[in-house]
View 1 (cartoon, one colour):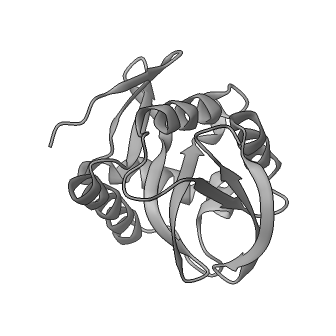
View 2 (cartoon, rainbow, N blue to C red):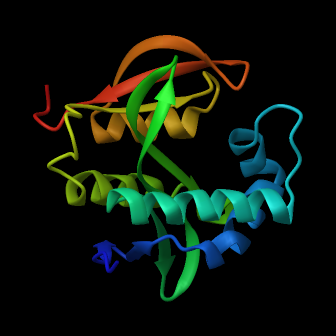
Length: 173
């Protein structure tokens, strides 16, 4: 499968592959980013990072869309994109992003997730909206959601922790 690469400002995105597990391991192993990405009690490991990368790569094969690996001048800085997921037992189209902490505050997550939202529409199947969720104290992700036009919807438990669910609609509401 050949999916198009995307650009967003200085960022270039391409479908995330199994071999990209090193970036995921770096994100999970970092104390700053790992606290937002790992479920409580889980440790970063090569095996876990490989499973996540394989899951993202398989999503691309099965659905024709998924998380992109984003780079600046050829150096990976994070991932962002869409995937099918489940929340509270129901199917969702989920927007997700994770950037290396040294690149936080540069607008990369907003630009990358925004490019993926624009590129992957019209949305596969009957999905009329996209959900994103985060911990209530993840101010950076909450800002990304607000900048992209996501609106707060409700609270839920995800990985045993309280999360805030936000929703985005392609028609802009």
